[in-house]
Amino acid sequence: MSTPSLRIDEIPTDLFIGGAWRASRSGKRIDVFDPATEQRLGSVADATTEDAILAVDAAAKAAPGWASTAPRKRSEILRRCFELITRDAEQLAELISLENGKALADARGEVAYAAEFFRWFAEEAVRINGEISVAPSGAARTIVQYQPVGIALLITPWNFPAAMATRKIGPALAAGCTCILKPATETPLTAYAIARLLAEAGVPDGVVNVLTTSTAGKISNVILDDRRVRKLSFTGSTEVGRVLLRKAADSVINCSMELGGNAPFIVFDDADMDAAVDGAMIAKMRNGGEACTAANRFYVQRGALPEFSERLATRIGALVTDDGLKPGTQCGPLVNRAAVEKVASLVDDARSKGARVLTGGKVLDRKGYFYLPTVLAGVTPNADLLGEEIFGPVAPIVAFDTEDEAVKLANATEYGLVAYIYTRDFARGLRVSERVESGMIALNRGLVSDPAAPFGGVKQSGLGREGAHHGLLEFMEAKYISTNW
Ligand code: NAD
Image (tube, rainbow, N blue to C red; front, side):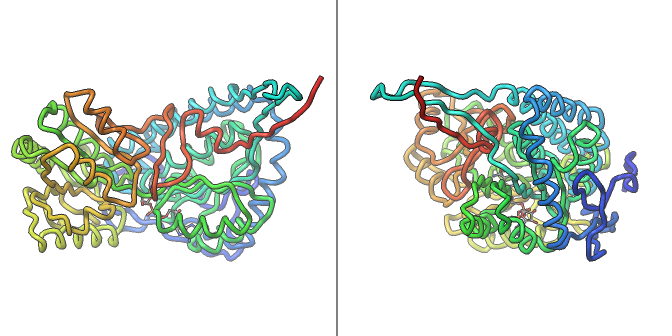
């Protein structure tokens, strides 16, 4: 393994509550592992329900002061958060690569993306405008004002441990909310490294609290049962999202849900083939395929099928798969053993139903959680991987003939996060974009993520949007004042 330049032992590993680093009430710890070597990296505190209440207390104590802090001041603190993450970008990228496994180049991309949420929401914090109008009857004036929704519980996944946290903390703070972040157990160190930077940037004590725990369900139940908490912003699987939505119903909590995806990648015969293959490499292989936006199903029109399949298999087959921190690595390990087993079983299922392996198709015989980047051709409609998130470096290819068929195939899923479409016919591109049931479309592009754009899904991919001005409004309530003068 290559040696990271960051000092793991300098990263705080206790709970961050009310601006102080505290051991868990139980004294228990959670081990953190390096997916490239299976070695233990260290441990973090394992929060109890008592710790969770202390975090809500801290967020409640800080709430009035933060909500009444001048927007310009909040904005400047957020801007400072952007600057500090940018200052420490290389160390954060190494840390992400170490605990998540992703290739360092991907981790660097994530840190830049994560920092941008603070810059964007520093700009949005001073653009919270209300509305004023005369009621249609002429009988009253209508004033609409936006106010912070209140204390927010933020739950994030392991696949983008920095960006999924800043995509929530940025708008929460810009809106004037205080919050409790519950990061994923697999990647807690990145969350604590960011919390330390937020404190250095001048985020007041209690405005952001961070709890790591091995009992996510218990902790989130206690927090959501506390009537002082008014917002849940969750990023993770649809399965857990459903559980949390049911729980949030008890207190009618305002929910934003960024859930799973099953992105179609549609290539028409008239596509610019260089662009389509380049885009496919980004859409499939960024983060080793461990992205909610990852292309999960490649639908290729019959005329383009031989060239696209061959070129994609050549490019994917040439990727260097190794320890994410090693120079030259393009695809790191998956996050844990369960992830490798899931990917392997999906590929085996597709093969048993008739798919052909053009490249890859196996677990690497070495320490660590490595699956060889894979392209499958002739995937049959009954293959399980067309219906669920692969979350790994596997590209299944399916042929289609007509535009209508492509749309039908793309929509044959409960998910609707993002869809990729490649065609030189712009009118067709827009027509298909409108017909595909998806919150986001990448038209002749392999990437949609942008802090300035509304990120989110339809159907069972979620509720609400993150980023853009929309992301700020997720943490605000509209208050309407009816008056006359
Ligand atoms: P996950 O749903 O297993 O876990 C997400 C978070 O929820 C973690 O912090 C976990 O500890 C916590 N959690 C698990 N069970 C819980 C419970 N009962 N109560 C409260 N919290 C609970 O997802 P994951 O495996 O960490 O991440 C991968 C998933 O996230 C994929 O489905 C992916 O598509 C999705 N994702 C979506 C987006 C998006 O923006 N739509 C972005 C990234 C990841």
